[in-house]
Amino acid sequence: MNLQRVLDSVYESVQPLIGSGNVAEYIPRLAAVNPDQFGMTVSTVDGERYSVGDSSVEFSIQSISKVFSLALAIAGDDEEIWARVGREPSGAAFNSLAQLEYKRGIPRNPFMNAGALVVVDHLISLEEQHVPSVLDFLRTESGNESISIDALTAASELSHGDRNAATAHFLRSYGNLRNEVSAVLDSYVNQCSIAISCEDLATAGLFLARDGQGNHGREWLTEAQAKRVNAVMLTSGFYDAAGEFAYRVGLPGKSGVGGGILAIVPDVCSICVWGPGLDASGNSLIGMAALGELTDRTGWSIF
Ligand SMILES: NC(=O)CC[C@H](N)C(=O)O
Image 1 (spheres, rainbow, N blue to C red):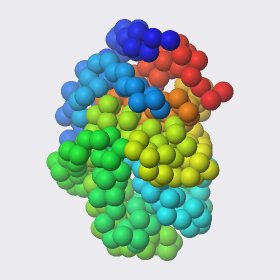
Image 2: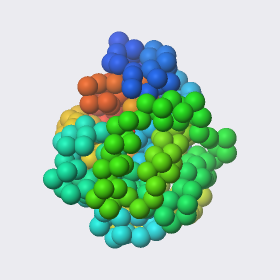
Image 3: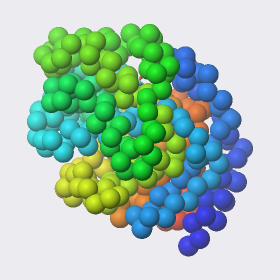
């Protein structure tokens, strides 16, 4: 299979969708991103890399960062985090608070904002500052030492962060947040504000296609742990559109409101696609379409 040719044809077929959807408006800095961009990279477990479009342009990682923080939490201790966060799909929006009350402060999964805040709280209890560990993970695996936080995005989200602040206070009222709300929010928002390209993110995600093994031999996760992170991505990586993503793409994946999606083909490759326009569930509209086309053409699916 000539992967470059496949990517070129996927690019051609999604061209009409470039610019479709709505950029995330609740974070003003993201609302200012030019919507007419699209990039895609496939990084294979053998070290090959294929790209199309704006694959070297940096975008805001947003919720895709939750995959890396979950991996760090699980690597430290498999069980501890699961006493505080569920691993069931939510069927609800990423920032929903509805289930948190009747679940008595236990978020449904680590990828909705409530769950991700608990993961961040867990990590900062372990090492005070967890964002440097997430950055180190991304830099080591992508080989790009210059990956960093976009301070303007972080400030923009922090000053419009009432929903996440409410979520954090609610969690704390149930005793499921151990650190100060402001410290957790600050860390969470900085983690979400990392700027990264499709090329670097696809390459950094390869550890999940390689049973937890990084690109330079480091074992970030055991095989069993990597299987579990992939499982949670499959069931909960797209909020109330997890079923839609499984139906159209058939892979573990994680989206972010910056318009990126990371998808994993176990033992084969890691894929990153980016287009800033979002659908009603907050997932990249063109990204979903491109991944659907790609997996149809390659037969890549876990099903
Ligand atoms: N789905 C997302 O990417 C949401 C992340 C964003 N930082 C938020 O908390 O709202």
